[in-house]
Length: 235
Image (cartoon, rainbow, N blue to C red):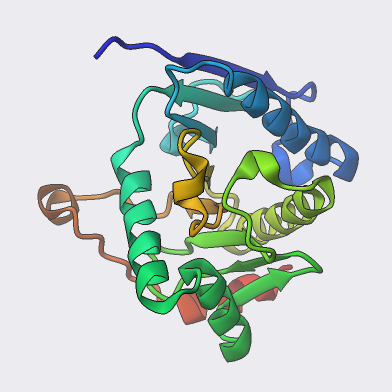
């Protein structure tokens, strides 16, 4: 198919302040800009999915030091997102519940892997983390589409994201990391009501080697329970 789409950069002013070190107002403005630009790209009928992400540090793929954030709109739903959508759909069909809501509720009840929560967001180390110190941040209300999120919930998500990123810095000596938004695709909204948008954070602790690359199976050497326990000390 033709390589149609859009690529946008959001650049913050301060050369040395990455996302966890922005003041509350500026951090909220970053996500408000995400939502505004996301909504504007929805007018392009060729677009199927919009990826929003931040690379911090050379190990995370950042080619320049100055903090910046990217949005790439593509004409296909990416395979990793499609896998997440299909799993969510199967669970919803079988149990008539959102798998992500159930997961967040379970984490809150067990109290082992929750790192931070506020009125409308929760951050935790997933029970089956793909990599060391992986963190996911969910809005507590069930919201499939990032662009439909009320601003008070966006602000809660921003607070949680900043808190856990600062905890990563303090506990792991300022690692490089990626964070990105997983949201439902932009087309056929009615078929994605089962989904629950969220933010995933992956610090660059180890480099994938032969086994991971040859099989697609991840090796995680850090128990998520222990990762969350350490991060909570610095929130």
